[in-house]
Length: 130
Image 1 (tube, rainbow, N blue to C red):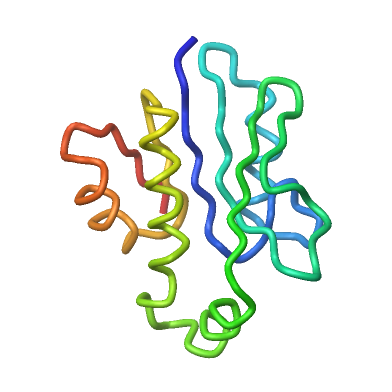
Image 2 (tube, one colour):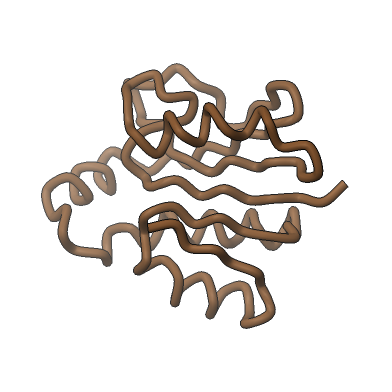
């Protein structure tokens, strides 16, 4: 079976237990994937979300990235600065190399694209939804 990696912004987890438009859309659409096994990459905040780091529900594998409380503080404090997002996307790229998906859906984070291209190579099939 083909594999699809879906990367949501590092603001809320999937399933959308704390809200989030993109998270809600991803949670609603991924159960309908028939030709692809979806791997959903999102966050799980320390002390807030009681979600496992890795979880499989049906055909969907959730991979949640936990950033340190300090990293989460700086993301919120300097929200418009992209440099604080690097640990999140670097960890996702590391895990993507492990699963080797056929396609990658990147949601609403265009500044992740150059980092991903450099980490994953120019042959990676990345679709940016913005």
